[in-house]
Image (tube, rainbow, N blue to C red; front, side, top):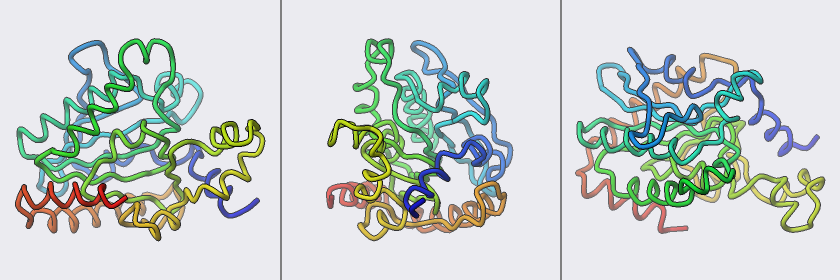
Length: 256
């Protein structure tokens, strides 16, 4: 197995720490909030408020399950529109109360079902991109497994985008790439080699700002490392004026 395909296998491993694991390991007194105030709650996206040391922080992330029953509850980490609208509701609440935002991303992509399309999946994702680009509070996005397509980007328009060492981030899955390019999904391993979707490749290209070492993705040490990095980076971002922060965020994404 090639290095790239080993990383893909690791990124998809059900044993990885989830958003809720990180929320409870990194933040004190984390409590979850539910619902988009429009349709229903979506278990594929979780969010709430916790404390990073003494600082209140809004935490939002895509939640995969750790077994079949949990994955059915979480829709295998594929959010519906109401999930993205819940995320946006919590982000706007964070802006109102001047709380920094941390997002954790682990999804193969947004759910492509008929119901999701009928309820405006594309609009919900596009709305998040628009609103996040102009939010007046610091945002740090961390890809903790898979970062797939617009479903991942809808939580990743941030001042800083980080990736765990054994995570991937791409416009679509290697299987989807192979199906489109060669009409043969079985060539996914070959596609993965071409796509440059690993953390090291994306860091070299400037797509992500930091690669976080993993001593083992089961390890709580990874969460402790992330906590220290978040404290340091939010301290840096706090030194910027709101106008400077938004301008830097704008330039970050415009350079692509």
